[in-house]
Image (cartoon, rainbow, N blue to C red):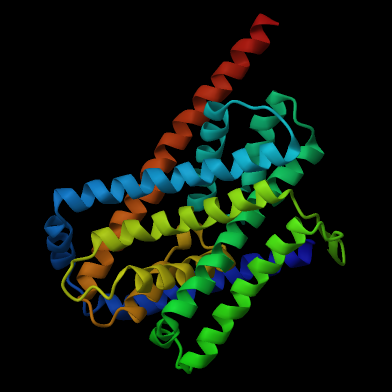
Length: 310
């Protein structure tokens, strides 16, 4: 495990380094004054839509935890779940999984509500699986409806992209079928997949895509209408860039999002693309991160107060 963790850390640092180098080459032809002009050109209405999309995204992330709690058969208030989920994702999105794991935040929070370490472990894996399920489902839909999206990054025939999309949708369908028909647990080495109840699976298949769709919408609303390739294309690029960012373990997808979007949107002014990504980082990453720090401090203060009373 130590070797594996070290390898991921090296991979993450390498991904950041490569992204920074590519960004350096891109930034030589970009005027930051023009990026500021692009930011100023975003209308108040589009800012409002982007903010609403952010709220929906974090609401869907809280739904991840809620579904996991239902799967475990536990009762925890919606408010507590929402604050815990918000804090977990706001911190892990910004700091990176290689530095601090959302497991630490969840364990600290949910252990105060009577959940055991094993139950919290199941909750963490369940939330990660819900995200992965949403990514596979949305990726499958994007590739079957707009297979040419892949050619923006890699020169691949449309039929291959479409076929991959069909396979992804089939995997989601197989998961739902396994839950419906009560398939035995699927096991690979030490990993075991226990099919949840069908109502739980239905919720997963709504929550995962909703979070990704809302997060991609932040960027879509911040881009100008002129030359905009459409929401599905932005969604497909977002799925690719966000997946690469998670695999790289780069804090906040540092550089990875920018490189991917700049490469995949040649028809748009790069200043407008960077301005949209700044809006995304501000609304989805930085502002939630600041609020999450406040939530952590207040939570710890409350816990200290309870210990003093005891």
